Length: 496
Image 1 (cartoon, rainbow, N blue to C red):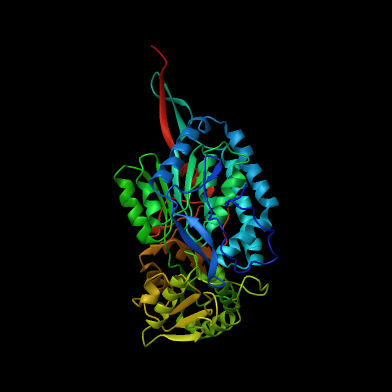
Image 2 (tube, one colour):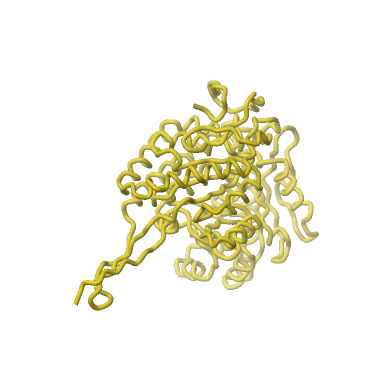
């Protein structure tokens, strides 16, 4: 069974621009692939070549309703499945994904342009580990002790699944974000209807097909489509929870739509991560680490190390070191095993990055990069911009590309103030040799994660999620599992 009617060809060693297939991808609902009832499709593009990479269905009201009703029926039995059985299913999914890792890496490259060697090394292993983490966490939900909090009555707390969860994932990490969403939801006993980004649906469909080997039909469903499909999913009366990773605009719209039906909402939105480089920082270490964390996945990461605030005492030395590191970073097609990152997701995203750079103020200076690469695909040079001020657009708005900005600071207090003076609060890092300074800044920075002398490592056991306009709710960790549960108090009268 494949996402298309026709059999899939043998995968090549490296992805190339694929020709448009005769049949589009199909939704995965109730354990099988289904065509969208409207017959409407949208074109998919290989961002490394700009050529067509197939078509995907645009799911309408009937398709969304079919998927949600399938998940609703599945919930009635899945909710009562013992945690040990849910654990076993997730462990089997992780094992199967590990066995088919190369196939998934290739498919991810087709619609994202990511270098396969980077995806295999930096994404596949963590994803498999994260599924295994939630498999174990399914058996460790905690609550208060059962005791007599009120005389003559015994109380205890039940943690129960919410029901059907509607989940929307972005295009920058299609497979990883699908894992972050479905694994805790299913581990907690919920069922899922997931809508991937309209530009990158393939690996989510493949994941649902793989999972169907070990989960009852209807537990994990995937519907493809446009923004309109996502709104249909959110506004439908069946979902008990809506979980979205995306832009602030998308998050505010989802929150508004969900409020009308009092749905629980989980949002992981944009970021503009402050990277504070103190006067005593190890400059070569900081420059190398920030370059990698700022350019990984072409900077298309809400937690990207994109906004550096550096003490004036070391500003010039740091800019020199960072410019060299960034200038030596390579980009190119996924078939090149030497590149660090691939193309931007789309022509529109490339235009967005170029627009930000064209709009730089006169006092800004590009020390390396600054241009799109000529030829096919949506490639952009790794770029450093210095001389920026706090209210400049490039500092305040998310660029979401391979661009690292640098500002000068008068010291620790000003660095923390500048770090917090944006509407986002997802991630940050502090680079210093002084433990007290690191702890003081970690306390003062208003972000959901503070890395110290590193940036972007993620552990399955630790929560990921932001403050302010970066959203609310946590991915990963036991906190994420708890987000997919409700708490019920049960009290029993013991008699007189």
